[in-house]
Image (cartoon, rainbow, N blue to C red):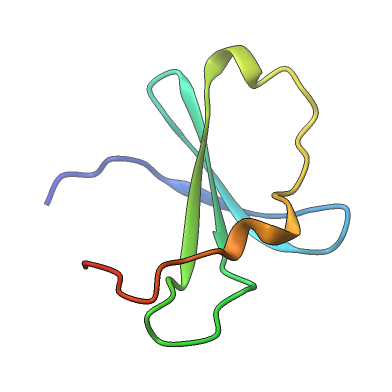
Length: 74
């Protein structure tokens, strides 16, 4: 195995648990999929924050971030 990143458990101001890591010059944010309705929907969602956006204050993903195709190819 090759390690790509390491994550630390964090909690947002809204008390939502997420994981933060770093890869190269980008920051990684890993969230539980709060919109999972079927087994075809992913359990976790990974966001990459580019280096030029890291100085902005973190804002949680929008509520509609859970739009998924019913036939996920993986």
